[in-house]
Image (cartoon, rainbow, N blue to C red):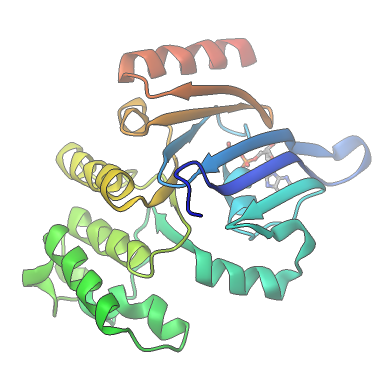
Length: 251
Ligand code: ADP
């Protein structure tokens, strides 16, 4: 049964240690958290607090030192690189700060790339879904444009369409508005929020921008690899205050 509280990503006592002995760095320290389906979660914390490691582990790009990581019910910590790559291809979508579109492909080809990489044709239903996404994201009139012919905001909308198209278990977004102006940022964040609320798409986003994080319905806070905060949606000033407190604590 697909309960609305179904866990899409679950960390159980996850630790990730880089290096050994004196030089060892505990990038994640006993992190336990469950991300349920349809949630839009922001991950924040000072530089070096473990945000990238958190995302890499959730994506199966990094293995863990101890603990359990479940993605779409699959135990990532028990899988080898190859199995994790397959799981990532099938279950995880990515949105990056730098858009990461293929410059030689047009908009539609970029959005269809996940299907191409998986070596499978779209069903009629999926074709309808992709057309719907392109329409909702305002890209219908730009189908044959290449990324270089689009603004930053438009490129990021293509990247969002590409991430949502295969309906992955989770979309991981890393500073998705880091290269955008204020107006495009708001558009992109609004679209991510819509994807979560209306399509039930689970989204985990790293951002250090309090305005960006305020679009999420949940805020996870990391400090020194530990999960030190788990809050329901907050306003930008509340988030800014929280972060200032953390940075002062670290100083
Ligand atoms: P954030 O994304 O919050 O800046 P990171 O997850 O990148 O934090 O890093 C957490 C800690 O782990 C930092 O102290 C960082 O230096 C360390 N770290 C990250 N990746 C590596 C690596 N590949 N080798 C060694 N140390 C690493």
